[in-house]
Length: 49
Image (tube, rainbow, N blue to C red; front, side, top):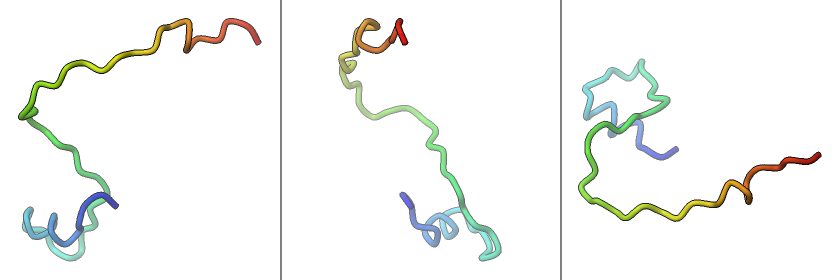
């Protein structure tokens, strides 16, 4: 699991009867990284089987 159940429950003031199954981050990045290189479509698409 990528997060601590106990810490999330405490931060959100949730009872023990709840179980966190997912978290979704919302907001803006604090950085502006350069775009990553992409593969060409020819390297991804299979035209023959």
